[in-house]
Length: 393
Ligand SMILES: Cc1ncc(COP(=O)(O)O)c(C=O)c1O
Image (cartoon, rainbow, N blue to C red):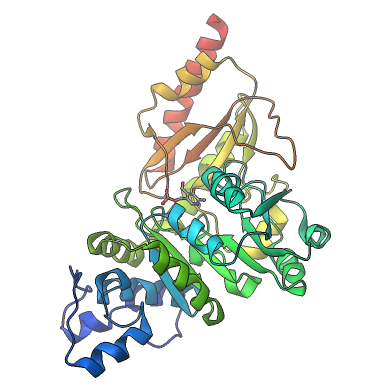
């Protein structure tokens, strides 16, 4: 597959060489642990190319090679590796660059289990983490120490959706010889061009928009060639690999990701705009809204918004929030996001670099592919229930 053409075109064609050879459309699902060899020379030679040659099931088959190729090419990386979850991709990517005595810089607004990993396993290993405020920009340079090995960002931030100035942070990180890792799950390779913005390692919870149907767990790390040795070595030592049926679901989801994301973008903004007009809402945390303090950076660096954003309500008692959420017809209460359906959760983000004291309850909405007019009607009925419960309290 030539690396030209728009991303939409590439999504329809990348990673299909084996399928095309077999004269079918989709890459077959290879169930394999043992791989056999023609002779001793073959056995010894193929082991030089783990994760791109068939050597043993854990190191991949044409099914996983197809998804690796598609994900790395769509994002403009050189190599990609697959993981059994987004959380596994996060931990493997960080572990590839640290050892006892090292220091890392992590944005305060990262996915909470990423934080737990830093404050748990990494701390126990003797790796120190400093959390920095999402608006730090080039100021990150002041926090870099001689033993700082990496800077980790997630833009926009989990639950509070701050956009970080990744090019400015990356420039400082690179000056000091640090690598910069980015959790690009929210934007996907379609809406944020990690490698053109200075990122070295782009991490995806492919469980979300790549799989896209809330039915499989999957992680992907995309990187430039110089980092492949370190990341693949850790991946092999940890024994991470993904079952072929889940890889297939990732490949299948990828083919429609651009149409789904365009709709999530449109629907999310329609609902966010409507929420801004509601008297029950204090702030909508969506960087695509012109009123959002992160809008200018989002516009500069991103080409779209996915369907996930936050809403801070005016202060109301908990039972009123429950009255709003519990009876919603189109929203399920559930973790994860990126599927075709709408979801809602309450959230309490942990923050240490900067205080987070919202004026009221924080909700996270994932706006699915339903008609936004129906979603708005569902939320409108929810606000009526919230107001009745507030008055009764
Ligand atoms: C931003 C982000 N990164 C990583 C993950 C972890 O992905 P997974 O649930 O596939 O382990 C999540 C999950 O919600 C997430 O929201």
